Image (tube, rainbow, N blue to C red; front, side):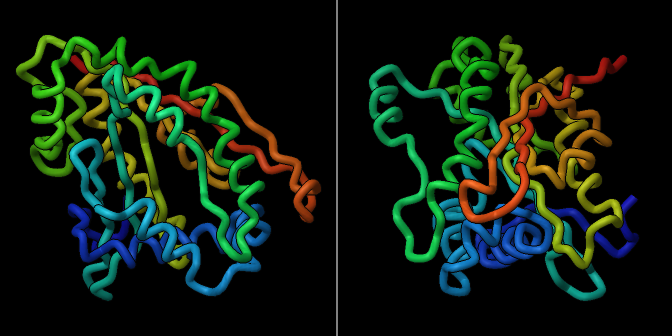
Length: 255
């Protein structure tokens, strides 16, 4: 259980800089690849790129972000984001392939390592998450409408429309970060539970890609490793092997 003074609530657009700073703090404190990728970049580069690329906007029609707030300190200390994989129209697929890539050249940033780290698990997502199969019978108009209504009840993420006859049985955990000063207090597990409870209710598989240091946290919430991608940090001036894990959580049976 998280501390009694921690409250979970929807993130706002004004939270974008704070969410980015929490992500940066968490990565820089424990991620072996972070200093090799971002260490030579000007201070604030990771925050700026996160705001532009990940939190503009914070809330979208295809995903939802919750934050954990320390009510005594009046500060955001963690957050989690869940989403539904996007379904591209046929005429958008080629454009999507052309746009698929990674970071543009950025002074001081090791983009090659970033691409090796992040891109290595994309093949597993492409193989395992069949969006058209899972969502294909839902018309674009209905899909957009029910995605706009993702927030239901207290802290739940709506994974499919209750009024549709479609079993939308796929969702993904996009981000889950807690500031290093607040880790190991149950905050991450509490944030994850917001999504897993609704995933169970919807009988949805929950996919995520994990850094090496976060695997045990996800395993405690019943995610299992499906595949791994190893990055030889020695090729980029570091030491050791950095292993990213492609994970899935199967829904629990609810009476």
